[in-house]
Amino acid sequence: MMYYSFELYDESKELCTIVTTYGKYQYQRMAMGLKPAPDVAQYYIEKTLHGLKEQGVEVYIDDVGLFSNSYKEHMELIKTVVERLQEAGFNINPLKCE
Image (cartoon, rainbow, N blue to C red; front, side, top):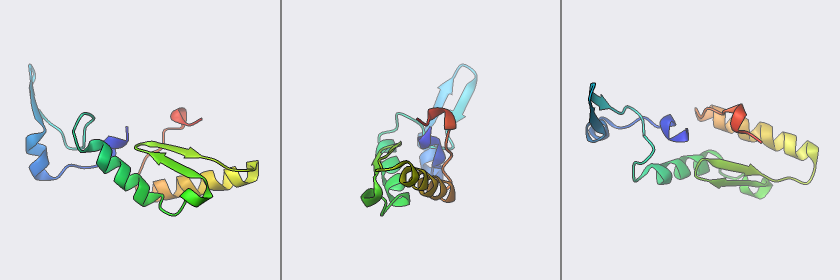
């Protein structure tokens, strides 16, 4: 879940506290369902992969699509995208990659 990559500000943590039968739970990271979550995710993923659209990279919130003309180009593009995502601190789940 990409949203969990983003730590909440202290002021936001107070607003993201829920009460359960087990007590209070305060989110430390952005959770799914928060109104600004998709916008924040889109902003940071686009910032991370800036300049790669011309090479065949399309981004939609937490989905990244790669398009190339050859196997060799595709493998190089995968390497570039993975390196950029890792440098920015994003985790990649290989089970969700096709």
